[in-house]
Length: 183
Image (cartoon, rainbow, N blue to C red):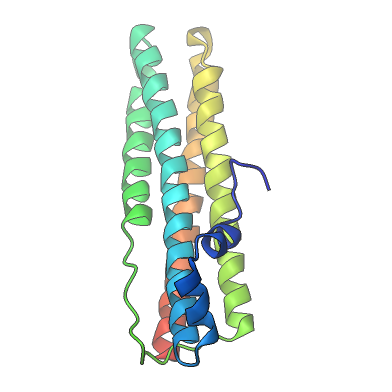
């Protein structure tokens, strides 16, 4: 894996100190430790995706400055709308409820449900990565002489933001469904 896309599970496992490793060997503490590791991995994933959404927003803020500097106000509303949507989605992702699971919480997730969650994560992460790239491309290729190209790109970006939001919502529903069924 590249340094830009670190292996989250590996990072969590590497961060375990000896006491945490011992918890994995002691009956009763093992499940607790694994649930906490899932929470840590989830938080790492959410923060990385929120950071990417923030970078996409920063690209659009740079684009907005260029658009204003060029006096090209025809696309300013769409740029501002996309910035607001990215800021809202980033906040939702970064601050999603993590929850807490004590020693006796009976959460059992079977492997098929876990694979389903990984699938939702993959589709959401892919959508965010593509969105970040598209926002960066709009900023880096902006040409004041061809504002119609920018409008088309902003329209496509709006669809990508909507798609990422839908994938995030689907992921949240899946997580909530598993936690409700497992408790």
